[in-house]
Length: 380
Image (cartoon, rainbow, N blue to C red; front, side, top):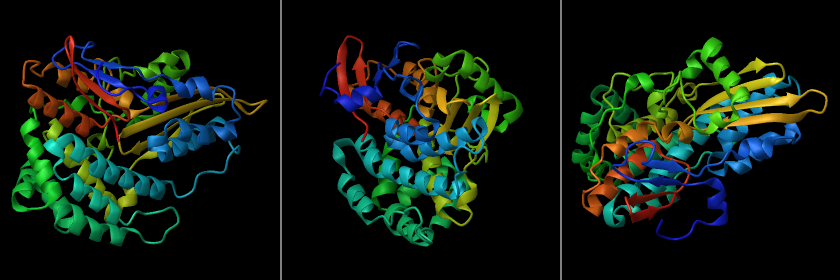
């Protein structure tokens, strides 16, 4: 592996090693560890949400909330029920989309750092919604119109829903603005390989069977959290796999997934945005609760088991979107296997970077040719 050594915190978070053209499972290797299970065991249950937020600080809001929700059915009454869950998810998911668009997309999708200065300026002017602040959405819609989309947000969403990727391309041609130009320029790196719609992760739509089966599997096979499967097969998750089904009729390639992320950001900012994301919790056994939230990277699941005598955590399991999407046999691994490893370095790097922007891992990654390092890229 070539490049700058990972910092201590990054080493703890883990990293992905990518070898384009290598067949699964050799093309995608992860050093992620199950810190939730290791560090959650034995802690007072009331402290678990804060611990999970610290362990997964890149998406801390979602992990804190999901942990709180899981404790509810595991030990009813132990913690106050989280309030304003839908609005909290809405705010934090919108902000995470904006951070990734402003920080990661220019770095990954624009050769030579083009648009980086414009993206930085955009982030500095964003009216960041904060917890408890009244009415942030009109200001955010105005910012989307003038700083990101170069057109009214509702009009952009209507055009996307009518035209899908054709609209995404048209938008890039019609609008001489940094984000449309950035998204359109990335289309040349698309390998045009379609996602399989039947492997989109929607197990939370089957609470009586699939969620309870997941809970039982996590309890019996803790290692499952790092290599999750749905009915014995890999699955992919993101804004395109919501229970709301907003992308069900679209042909989705990695480039098209950028559009689904933009579309969700717009939907969250418009009226009714608090109804975009699904969440909930169920009891999956005695003193055991499982919770899920749809967050920026996809579906997040926490399961916790509590000792009723001591109110301490007996078991804690987290299945994050990165584990689904970057499973060594999963969707990204399959896409990587189809890449031509003999492409010039620049072309190969652009294709891999598009995959990373589309599926959005929460850890750094390195790209390697077989036997030689190609490039290293860290997560912002």
